[in-house]
Image (cartoon, rainbow, N blue to C red; front, side, top):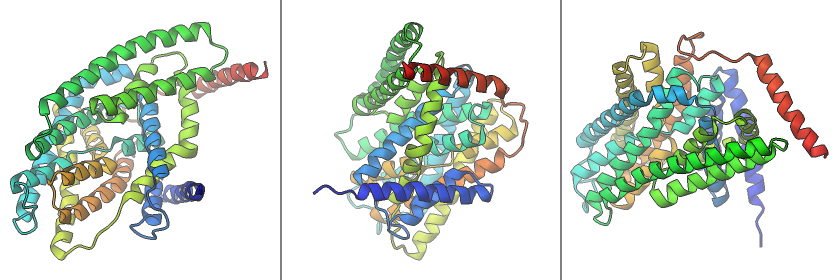
Length: 422
């Protein structure tokens, strides 16, 4: 018999994320914090009204793909190119320093009594550091979009660094798991990563050429461009994950970057903003909270959890901040970039699960990792709000005249209405 519980879950998630979003907005915090809290409160961690289902999981995955796709659409490619070298340095230090911090903390707390006897304690300690290298850029993207700071100098550096951070994180995870699981081939994984970017560039150039050609010949019905753009986004996301082992959000972001230089970018972005705000984003952010299950822990594990949260925040802020400073960013921008990389989100949970599957993490440490994910995910938007509070930053790009934007949007809508009436 067909179950319709997903309709109730959907309605509950949408109304709760909106209400909590309005509540957090009243306290001058980003609304994404409210959406995260809604999932956490309604999920197994607290009221246990909602549980993770295939429906919630799959819709939330589409949600994060659309979120990163729209981030790519709104990114200034020229500015992103300028921050390329800086992004690599920021990402590198944002991986190395959290890795060292996590290893040091685990080295002090982990011992033969609680460690997994089937795997080297040294490898298990290193793996705790690998978990801290993760960055959930989707939380930062939504927060920066809400504040209108996504396309700033610091915002572009965060985006570039987060993409590189994902790649470095995959490499670190592959290296450490290959030491515990002999079936994993490090060189094959590295080859796949390189192959993905080569194929993505080739596919992007071909798609860009065809897309521009379509725009010249079929410029009356604009809705077809939205569908074609979304198909390209989904295919690139699918290929990234399935064939190359790269995160699907990386493929989605690159798809957005490719389309960002076309004539219909503004129209396409406006359509995706609507569906994202109405359905996909609330589902994604609520699902993070719904995934959280807090286990019972001893006093020593609670202390470890507190220290792990502190280390997770400080190492990202220091690592990415120092990297930005080496690349001649202002002090305020260094702090903004560091705070933008704090969130671990669902990425850290996925890394922890993969490591636990091959014996790289004792089950007793899963609780502290979950707590760290929850706190850094909720804290990141709040910290970003604080560090971006200063107005009129010189690094911000000039804002296009609102009247011009409105006129352009009205023209696009008028074309669509005329086509529909025919």
